[in-house]
Length: 228
Image (cartoon, rainbow, N blue to C red):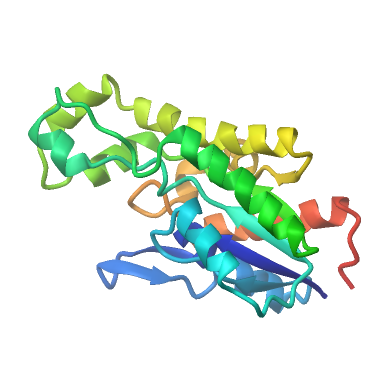
């Protein structure tokens, strides 16, 4: 069985919003468990809820016991997040994302180099797209929705903003000749994409994680690695 160490955020961790419990929780059938149950890929999961690429790199550099030969790097969703409460209070202000795009791109490059320096194989993963209407409703709950919309210009702007971070993953992959798993495209190819997300419009639900597992299996099979 192929073993892959994954550094990423809550999506990589298998977290989604659980309506019945009214909070975020790890899904019973997130993609890692599906792959392990099928006996195809063993995920050494180092992903963390809320993590940025910078935090992931720091954790990777502090980790000595990596038993996998492939290191998957999946970030962008938290890096691009904006201070929505501040924006709701003053939409005319100037705001920065949690991690600027240029710094995100540099950190990904440093991450790839750090993986290679340890004799391991890096694999960059694009973040799934946002479902913009659902995400907008989620982030504006309890806040001044009109002010947030004034700042954005239009609801789809949150999709376009996050997409820039996904495009940065592509650029790093091209520049450093790094293998890319375009998870984002697997979601965009679905006609029923909204059905793949939990209520917040950013975390895939169990159906979405089945898609991730299926896409991962196809990817690794085409990558011609030994999955036996």
